[in-house]
Image (cartoon, rainbow, N blue to C red; front, top):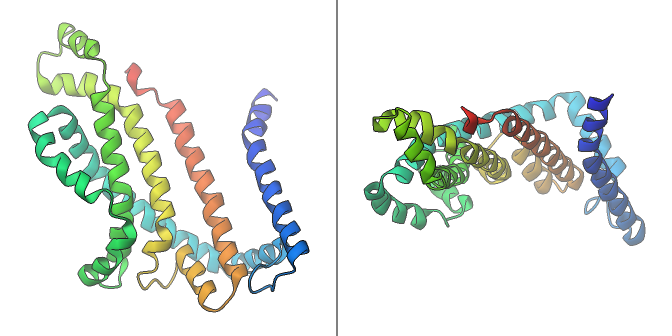
Length: 255
């Protein structure tokens, strides 16, 4: 019972927020009486969601978007974490690499779409590239921050307790101490990648939640647009919850 109450306390705020949004949404429809092509009712949007789910189209779109974000996020992690660890521990490398990062970091993933089409065509690679840009920098910067925020006392203690080589010190002290911040970076990066899915799937997509939204816009089906937005929001919350649980369960700094 205690576990159930704890779960309900966690879900409660989201449930209340969802009801509040639906209430305000319905109130706006009742007060302004907009065309259904501009703003459909919550009930009409829910009906569209159910129709898309029954037809299997929504499941296909969810799978396509999740697979693209996951692929780009994993690729970004594989590249950004080692670079971040190197930048955080090697001052010479940092002096060379940091200006490059700061030049590219402010450029929006949207700005890379034309180059993604030119370089990779209209296949999956272009979409994954755009999401990769969105996910790379949060992982890199949090990895650097995690390394640089390690207490120097821990470094000295590691050396005293037997970490007599740089590799041993890195594996036993630096990496475990930096891991909580790296996990935060991974969590933020997945969120930014998930938010960038709309931009990525503008690159001649044939499926995906971004495609669902852009297709709904083209055929003046705002119920499809809102249905896609609802799914992106709900899945984003669920994915973020998974990262929160992992962050609480895994205490790397204690290893």
